[in-house]
Length: 173
Image 1: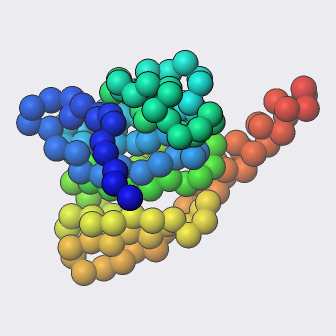
Image 2 (image 1 turned 90 degrees about the vertical axis):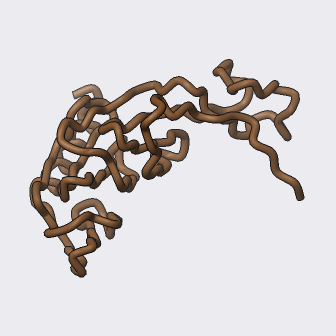
Image 3 (image 1 turned 135 degrees about the horizontal axis):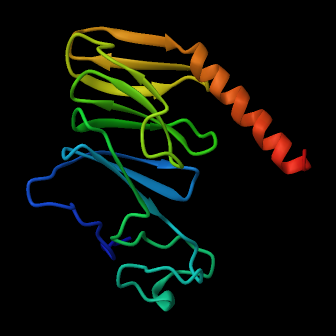
């Protein structure tokens, strides 16, 4: 089977490197770049009327198949201190984790423009990987030779609050 590139996402700057990317909520793509930005792209369903980056609807295999994202981000998040080098989806209400070149880890909500939680100097050297175990526990690896497992009570409280808020909103309370 042969594959072809049907759309590209612009680098957003000549000197900007794309350092990392991950999917979130099964229909969004996060791209972390060296210019201190995380950009969010929407991947829509075919027939949804979105910009497919030059792909015609007829070129897609079947109705309802995923379409490639537009080259224009739907949101951008600026992390003031450092370029982004890792992203990890928390798979829970638009939340994701990022690590930065300044050895910090942040928890983000795609509906906010700044991190909702911030962990500074969590390692002694560049963070090489972040991943989650569940909604309250995540791990990070670093060039310092350590793997840190972090249990965040604040993150747990945030998840409880989001869950209760979604119950209240859906029941009309």
